[in-house]
Image (tube, rainbow, N blue to C red):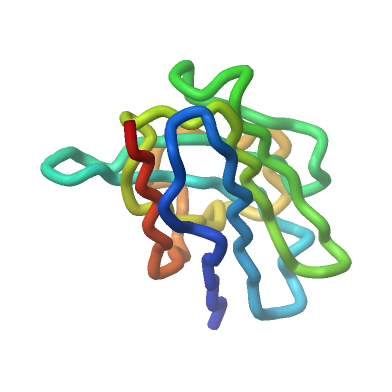
Amino acid sequence: QVQLVESGGGLVQAGGSLRLSCAASGRTFSSYAMGWFRQAPGKEREFVAAVGWSGRGTQYADAVVGRFTISRDNAKNTVYLQMNSLKPEDTGVYYCARVRRIWTTAPPRLGVEYDYWGQGTQVTVSS
């Protein structure tokens, strides 16, 4: 069983930064691509960013390109999301997730491609 635990959320003013972390249990973390998703109140969950198992391949939603950076440290079983120049529309619950298939170098954007999810961490950006 894989457990994912997010941290680092909080309240920040527009233009500020936050760094989210997602700690994973288990010895197979380094074999799987990881992703971040978010869900704003009253909206559907949406893709934010993803990184391949080795850390080389990344994908970003258009809304966060140039502002967010995803990375991973396989030695620490942790994936990060550095969020800069935050906007009120970035507000939501942020979830990390593990890709269903092993050794994925081109991480997917669809939520159905992910099988394990964390509980989420709240990010609130005030204007």
